[in-house]
Image (cartoon, rainbow, N blue to C red; front, side, top):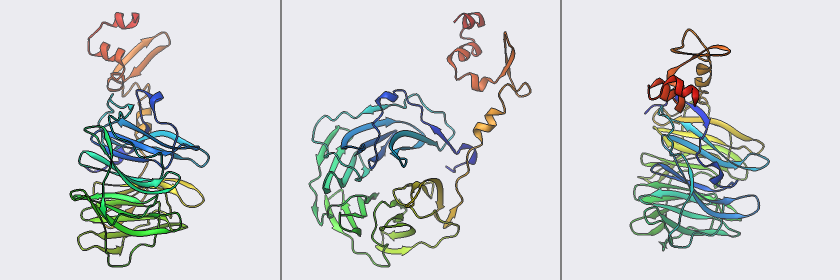
Length: 354
């Protein structure tokens, strides 16, 4: 599905139960499974936390929480990637754990979803960690993964991505230095291995973005002690690094940004460049090898505003004390009263009396 400019719009996420939302936090992880976003752990400004929340949604991707330069926030923003209407199932709920011990309260960990489970690796709980935990969505149970092999050293702010039946861990910081090692965990054998790579590897870093496209892992940006905006590919068929060659202007230097692979593109949002927090939105098209200009703002709101009380475009007129009000059935029908009136479920007199 191609992204159409007319459907590209940020909007606050409607939520049925905002009082049940997670507290303000940063440095948490999130994972998507089916129609839900799962949030685990993080830092609330005073303490590391290990609560676990689910938000049910459809047809959009979401940005939740972070740090705005002065305080941690827990606002929740939607970017709608199709034209379907929001559903009424969008709500927060605390994930009920039926058995097992959750990971210790922590932040700056990494997480992925594979098959029927979410896997969390490492992070910081007062110490740098390399424990590996599984949450099974079908049984609602936590378990410590009994991994063997070349287990990665403790670290935080690393990246973790799924490739076929494995997950690939890259980089991070172990408390004394940045890292650029690559480890692979095989879900079938439950064995970690250190991946021997060839080619010019990225400089050691943390707080970068990693995504999988086709049979390659792509790394963008991060912190090497300073913010960077280099772009690398690791071909996982031949285990070879190479710097990306591309056209267009890349996003500026940044770390602690977010990114995802979608529709043969890498999409990057926000981050910190060492002096300012960012909210730009960039797209790299795989195959075209080109960074596109910032995704344009939607014109939808202005287009709809032009219809307000417009007698030329109106298809329904409401007569009141102050004179006629020109409306549009397609918009009014979202209101239960107008819906009932326009579909003939109740009479006009009854609507007026209600």
